[in-house]
Amino acid sequence: MVFGGEVLEVSTQRTVDPEMLDGLPGVLRITQPSPRKLVVTTENAAATTPRIVDMLRERNIEVSALEEHQPTFDEVFTGLVEQQRAMRQREEWATAAASEADAAKPEGAMDRADA
Image 1 (tube, rainbow, N blue to C red):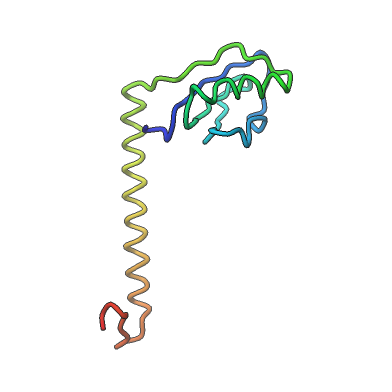
Image 2: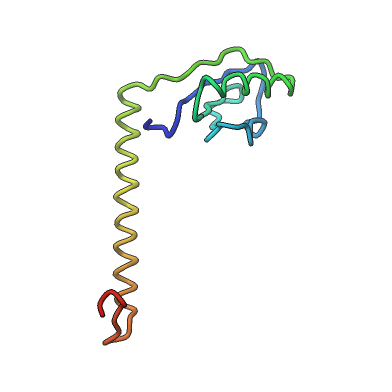
C-alpha cells in the first residue's frame, strides 16, 4: 500500500469540512482537494465507506459520489520514490546525529559498547 492504506474519493452536494470525519474509526488521513471533495485514506475501504456516509448524513451533507481510488502507475511510482527519498533522508539524519554525538564526547571517553 503505497499510500499507507486504501483511498476513497468522496464528493458531496455542498461544501464539506474534513474535520467532520475526525476520529472516525479506520480513517488514517483526510485531504481536501476542493470544497466539495475529500480524499480519505483508510485501513479498510469496505468497512469505512458506510461510516463516512452516515457521519456526513448526520451533519446534513449528502454524498453525491464515493469510490475507491485506484492509483495510476505514475501515482504508485511517485509514491514509492517519495517513500524511498524520505527513508534515505531519515538515514542521513540518523548518521549525522550519531556523528555529532561522537564528536561531542570528551577525548578518551568510551561507550559501554566500546569497553
